[in-house]
Length: 172
Image (cartoon, rainbow, N blue to C red; front, side, top):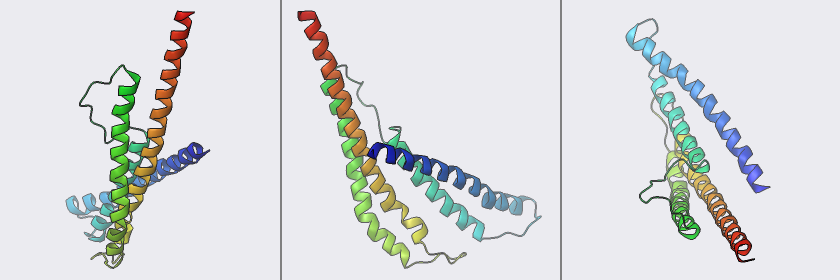
């Protein structure tokens, strides 16, 4: 049930990232047109808006990458054929991601509060708009890495049980 809810959350995040990518086209196109054609005047707020949208895209993308197990993972060692070693390799990665997520979530709260007392220059927008992405992403990194760790453990147990079954068949 929890997995299903997290899958729905990831679907919502994927839709949000697609919408944000579409929205990013508008201020960037305005900047390019204004800079190179002179058809429209140079609006300085478009750069700030593009930056705000880009920050959200990056942070949502990092959260989705943790869920999909496609980010924060460097293969220094070849994947082991031994189930326990393979589990340990994956567990180390997921635990480290979770720890960094907890750190980002914990210290990100103060960072978001700091952003809450600041305003952008051109749009006069509260900077918590972008600063809040840090604790939110950290929380989701920690949550998703915990789920990935659970999946790695279930995979280890399944491979261990399968190995025991094959050993029983050979012995009988």
